[in-house]
Length: 337
Image (cartoon, rainbow, N blue to C red; front, side, top):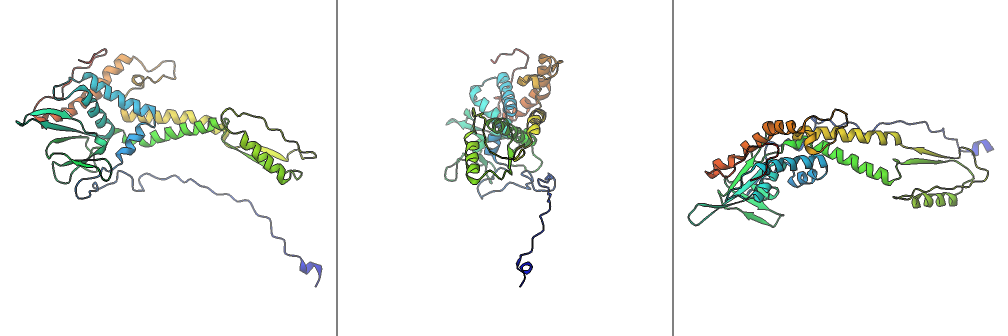
């Protein structure tokens, strides 16, 4: 047999390949968290259509969102008139629960004669509406369950188009913007901790570099990571080629330019959902003209946003049969009384 026949066939060189990934996901073509025909129930009470603990964590993911919610709570508290049945401290909890979750609860405690004695505010995150009308439960885990006295709980809820059991917060449409804003901040932190670059490819094709040198280079790169470790790396390769080692950055320019754009766009989305002017939240204008007169902005916001919130909260008075929820007129410089 000839030498030519003993040689294995030489495989053809692999060709270049290209592919795409990260296809956009349409919102309307998939089942979302709000596409519930009804709330699930376990035989005793209904579960909320969205995770209330998840909403609570989302409010802490972004300063604009949390600041807007607290601003609304503070304005309601500022104009609230305390009542012997409901203190300002308990009203603050009531207002914050309602603005955050779109649902809040008040519990009426009666005296032995049946007259109202005090109004308590159970945390809305843990209250569930019972299947039987008038029943409510406080649930703190699978084993801790407290049943309120039937008829003693009033549920203050925002209307929802998908179900009539629980209210949904008005800022729910801005959840994705809040999470994207948080992701941009976390990416920026990693970008800074990584030495102000988004990563790189170290291309090594020098034949004079052996495996031991590669291991040493790998360890040196690992030791140079972390905050404050901006170190230079020396490599000596006698007889090496000019382009034997290349450092190729990955999307470094894009990582710098996209951060501010994402932060600004998502901030505007949250301000729109909250319906609060930016100057009222302490946001600094980027243009020379600014946002305008803050006093006039506060008066317009009070007339178009605060007054409707106050009117909706007076539904508690209709259930209780007396005016417990009362408000002072809002003016710039109002002091709580």
